[in-house]
Image (tube, rainbow, N blue to C red; front, side, top):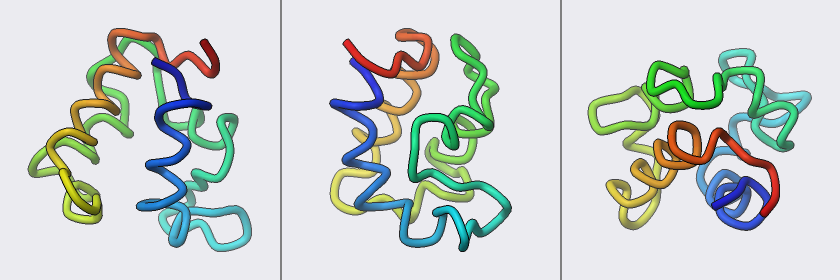
Length: 87
């Protein structure tokens, strides 16, 4: 699992409209790997991205479609795959 192949498409669909360079709500852009990583500690379930996108988190409700699966994918990417950029 990696940012380029698995997470970037989700972020582009569900997050970037509000979190992009030049219009980063909350001061957090998500339109590049480097930008996303400013709120990620690889391997940590306490990373801001993980906590805000889990069920009950402030951004969970903005996931389209199967929010539970997308939330779990974010958690696995950060915690289990150390937020890898590419495979």
